[in-house]
Structures are given as structure tokens and as C-alpha cells.
Length: 387
Image 1 (tube, rainbow, N blue to C red):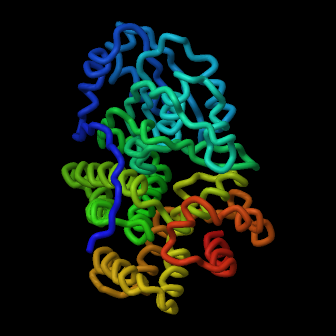
Image 2 (tube, rainbow, N blue to C red):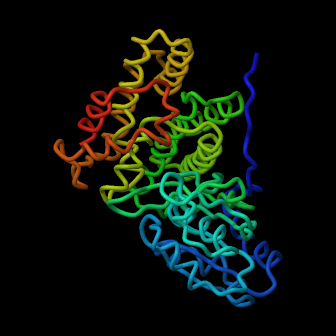
Image 3 (cartoon, one colour):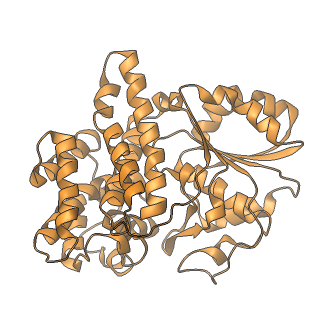
């Protein structure tokens, strides 16, 4: 018997190398006068003018450049300063830019503070008006925000929480892997590891279903070997590697939106709230130790689902290493991160003596989907290994 499940609405997806060459015409067809364009500094310098020149000439464009992860104060300021006649919001950039644009599109019709809507923080306000149309154009292959229904909003030292509504999902997602060769290596690999973490966690979460399993497995197959293709001297191989990463990241957004995540993201949330640290790198450094902790807990558990979840980890081991060995899976994850992302989390202020606040704030949200409840000791050890 297949348990009942739901699958959220997805955006209309345009995928292909150079597909954003057609983006301007699509935007002009959807607007008559005014739109809001939110981009990151890097994306604004390199991609906006050549992709959207016709839009900039023919429409009133309220342009905003955002830096770093979206804070509650940033989002409220963007909403307050936005003109009243905005017809469409475009987010062109990495996951933080897309989250900011998604939140702004949701808030412009009502213009209350984003804090009011945040899970576990605000007053429980729900969206009444429909969000403005929102087009997501990712320039990194990481968070999958272009296919999710939530925007992650933070206030450093206080919280990192989701603004979530089924209607927040983008109307269109334009997936153009031609952006990825311009990503600095540190950004490319960290964001890609975030995507892989989302795929693995949603594959092994308590809330997985046949559709998310199929998409997560497809995403992990695309991810496997993509870095090696990018390292190739062949331009054809490089393009294939970038395309695989871009599509895998969007699939990870679909799976997390419908199956949830696990302990890696359960810890990454409060780490991001209390330490100014790159989300992708945090997930990358936690992935191997948390996977080891999960496997050890499942091996010792008599939970009915433990054998099935261990079988899934074994399948992933076979995919990544060619050998169905659980210890080999953890080692492969360790090596993958060590080779590409050697910097540990201690570089961002995490120390053995200041992890208690993270631990005290990690038991809600993503942690609820983890295959088993991990002990404080296991979670602390995972963070220590990530330092």
C-alpha cells in the first residue's frame, strides 16, 4: 500500500543552455508598464544588461541589488520602498536573491512586515492576497529556491526561519546553466553540495514519497560525476557537468518542498542564525558527520523504517562509489568536501564552547524529518567534526 501524500504546485520551467536569451521577450509579454528586478551584485554586473536590455528600455524597472542572505529588515525595506504599480517581480541571482524576490512578491499586495509571517517567530499571519507574479532565474546551482514555496529570512543573532505559502512558488523558473562557468569555485562547489545535501536528506527523510524518491534519485544521478565533467578539458563535458548541476539543484528544491529535510539543515538553520556563515558550506561540512550519525543510529534502532532507510543509504553508496558499503559512503562524502571545500566552520566563529545555542534551537523545522531523533551528543559531535 502506498501512503497518501501531496505534491506542491511547481513553476513552469524553461531549461537549456542559453535559454535566458529569450527571457526579455517573456517578461515584455507579461508586463505593460512596471516591474521590480532584484539581483545580486555579481549577477547585476555580469548578466542583467545582456539578458534584459529590451526590458530596461521598454518598461519602468525598479532595480534593487541585494547582498548576503535576506534579513527581515532588508525585506521590509524593499517592500516599503517599492512603487505601488509593480506588475511582476524578477529574481536573478543565487538562492538568497531568489528568496528575497520571492518574499517581496508575496508581501507587496499586503505590505505587512515579513516577521509577521515567519514560522515560529511572527504572529501567525497568513497571506490573504495572492502574491505578484514572480520569475526566478538562478545563477547558481544550490538552494533550489526557484522550485520551492518558502523564503528563508534571518536576523543575525536571533533567528533564521521560513516565510511559507503554496502561492509563493515562482510562476516561471528559467534554468540556464550557462551562468555557472562564471561562478567562483568556492561558490559553485558549496552551493552544489547544498543541493546534494537536500537531495540525500529528502530521499531519506521520514516524509519521503514515491514522487520525491524518484526526483531525488534522478538529482543524485545527475550530481554524481558532475564535478569531474566540469574539471575536464573538453568543453562539451564541461557544459554537460554544469547542466547536470543546474537541473539537480532545481530537483532538490522540488523534493525538499514536498518531503522536507533532515538533521544537516536542522543544524544549518540555527548556525546561520547565530553565525555569519555561508549556508552551502555549512551543509557541506556537516553532511558526512551527520550521515555517519544517522547510519549508526539506524543500525542500532529497531524502528520499523530503519531497514528501508539503510537500504536507501546503501543505494546512494553504490551510486557514488560503485560499492554498496555504508562506511564507504561516509568516506566518499568526506573526501568530496575535503578536496573542494577545505575550510572548516571554525573560520566563521564556531568553537567547541559556543555550540550550545545552536543545539538549543535545532529541534524544530527540518530536524523533524530526520530518519531518527539524534541525541544531543551525536549532534554536538557532528558539529565538532565540521569545525
